[in-house]
Image (cartoon, rainbow over all chains, first blue to last red; front, top):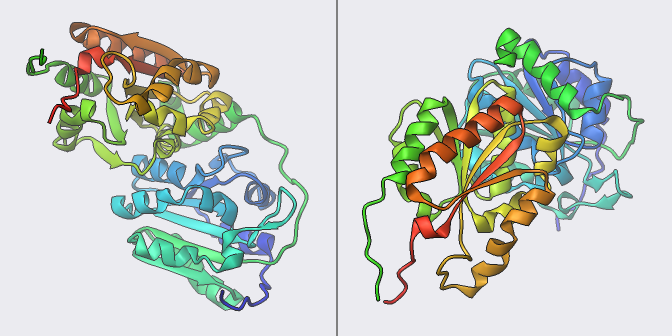
Amino acid sequence: MATKTKATLDRRAVINKILEKRGDALVVTGLGSSCYDVGAAGDHANNFYLWGGMGAAAMMGLGLALAQPTRQVLVITGDGEMLMGLGALATIGTQGPRNLSIIVIDNELYSETGMQPTHTARGVDLAAMAKAAQFPRSATITTDAQLKSWVPQLYAPAGAAFVAIKVNAARYPMAIRLRDGAHIKNRFREALLGNAAFD
Amino acid sequence: MKPQKKPATWPNDIYEVLKQVGIKQVAYVPDAGHTQLINSCNADREMKVISLTTEEEGVAMLAGAWLGGQRGVMLLQSSGVGNCINLLSIMNECRFPLLMLVTMRGEWGEFNPWQLAMGQGTPPALQHAGVVVQRVDRAEEVREHVFAAAQLTFNTSRPVALLISQRIIGFKDWSK
């Protein structure tokens, strides 16, 4: 097992730095902390918050990216959530959407369920898996400088991107209270599609 | 007696209905019963065809498609229904439409005993997961059943599974 370097980045600071450049990007979150973090960065009608359905986030991003090829789609999820749907990396890699970025906020823990280590704590390299699944762009990010240079790339429609951002174990309150799924979906569609949302 | 193989027309009936109702994303895990339909969709430049590693990917993907304003369909075998169960909770909580065309195994004339548990369990498993279950047993009725299922799911935003009887698909020849 690789020697572990202590992660220093803070999850909410990381997500704020990414989302302050969102422009008209569409965002899908995984369940748990990444959902709360995205909500804390500022609620937005084009955020889709998953509060359940563990393992769904990346594929939801793919369906959205294929349906909206001119809009950048960001999936912001956790390492445990990504590990539950690893096959999605192969499916996305073979589809090759230009406008999809998968961002894994990797604290190497199942922080909702008692801080048990995930396989990324045991040396599993998600960015290498994405690369092997034919993502043209992938990286593991551990520093502010790397994050800074990657943020514009996450919004560039230059092929599927995957980043695992190593963050510390800090936990934060559930800043977002909005959890009615039908409302979250209908609000997202109305903001994106206008009246066509009701066709 | 070895059953006669007749050229099937129902897969093309499904394809025509999918076109008629504006399906743009076709997600599938391969099944012999859907071979002809998958080929037709692959040849269609207006359809995006997505090969999945597991059926639960399709549930999530088609939710994303609907968020983005596109209609999709998932083609799967009954054995794949079990793979979808937890992600179907997304469809329920958010009232997403979902059109699942399920080719059945483990029922009419099945030769493989390993198919029985999930085949027989498919209708109750879907119902317990909150999916509207419909079924077609006759090839000549496939077209209207697919159309009706599509109307139901996209007009009411409820997940709908149409089970296509193993009797329509025919016996699997395992004699050699």
